[in-house]
Amino acid sequence: MPIRYFAGGRGRPVVLLHGLGGAASNWSAVAPRLARSRRVLVPELPGHGGSAPLAATPSLEPFADAVLAVAQAEDALPAAVVGHSLGGVVALRLAARRPDAVSAVVVAAAAGISSGARAAEAVLAVLGLVQPGRAVARYRRRWASSPLLRTLAFGWWGVADPVGFPPEVAESFLVGPAWHTDTLAAGRALVRTDPRPDLALVRCPCLCLWGANDNWVPLQDGMEYARRLRAPLRVIADCGHLLIGERPDACVEAIETFLARVNA
Image (cartoon, rainbow, N blue to C red; front, side):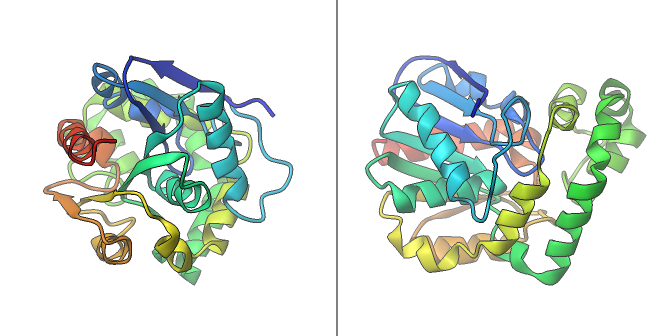
C-alpha cells in the first residue's frame, strides 16, 4: 500500500512518528532542526495524510511494519525512532519486535496506558466517527491566526498556552485531517493495545519526554513508561500534549542530547 513520507538531511537516521489524527506536518518545527546533523524520515501512518489505509488493523503491528518498510526503502536501518502520542506506542512496538532495526527510542507524550480506559475509548471512537478536525481543516488558516479559535482548537487538551501558540505551528496541526482516510482504525487498535506487557522486550536506550501540563496523556503515564523502560523522564515545564509544536527548542535539545549520549 502507498505510504507517504518526507526525507531530508544527512547523517545517522532518525524516524519521526506523528500521533493519532496527526500528519508529517506536525514535525515542521522539529524536523528541519534535526536534519542539520541527521538523516530525517517523517512517514505518515496508514490512514493518515497521504498514506493509504490498512485493510485490517487488529493491532498496532501493521503500523510498525509500515514504518519499518519506509526505513528499509531508505536504507536507514538501524534508526533512532521518535514517536509522539500514538507514534510513541508504534515506536515501542517496532523496537520490541525488531530490536535490530531500532538503535534508540524517544517517546514524547506516548499514548497507550490511559488510552485503554473506557472513557478514553469512548472519546477516541467519537472523534474517529465525527472527525471534527476535517471541518476545521478547511479553514485552518483562519483558525490558526485567531487567538480565540486557537484556544477553542487547542485549549486544555493540546497546549498550555494556546494564545501564545505560533499560528504557523498551529496550522501544521490543523492541516492533516483534510487528507485522512481512516483514523478510526488506528484509534481502535490503540485502545485494544496495552503496551506494558511488552515493554520488557525493548532493549535499546529510551527517553521519555513529557509536557508538565499534559491533560490528554497525563504525566503519570510518563512515569509508568519511564519505570518500565528503565529510562530517564524529562519533563518540559509550561507545556501540554503537543510539546513537539509548543516547545520545539526544548524537544530538539532533549532528543539531540540523548541520542549523542547513547551514540545512536
